[in-house]
Length: 195
Image 1: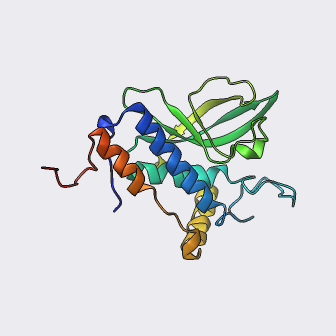
Image 2: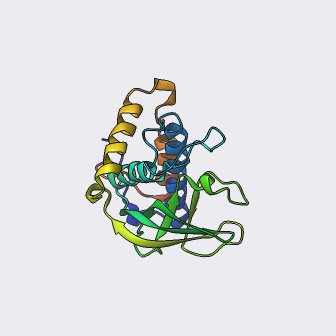
């Protein structure tokens, strides 16, 4: 099992850095695992579509489970995204935080062609010009998501990940982040104490 950090000891900036680092790492790996079969069944994919089109459910579930294993209080969120007058159903991950406002983590924000062109959005539930805002409707713990069709697509995603060449599999940022966290004074849970 990978390091699980004592999140109560992390500063807001280190907590955010860990969420972002994992989001980037996960997105880069998922780009090689997505397929038409893992996309939402109601979407007709076109050659000009960005690779993340229709992949929000499986991607958000993968990230939420991953971060839950690392000790974060995560949710799989279904809701509505509002961008430049567009309103559409969407799915993202949410980190509850310990004493912090909930943070939305969207690994597939580029499918909505935001003005800033970001592939990943991490932030609070606020309206940002050019980014839009996320309106949560339903929350699920990652291991309690009840949608059978999405879970079937998620199983295909996991199989695709298992079959990726080693160079495309996740390379965690534990070494560099672990050093930052150690400088902050937090230790991975279960790690030997420093003397």
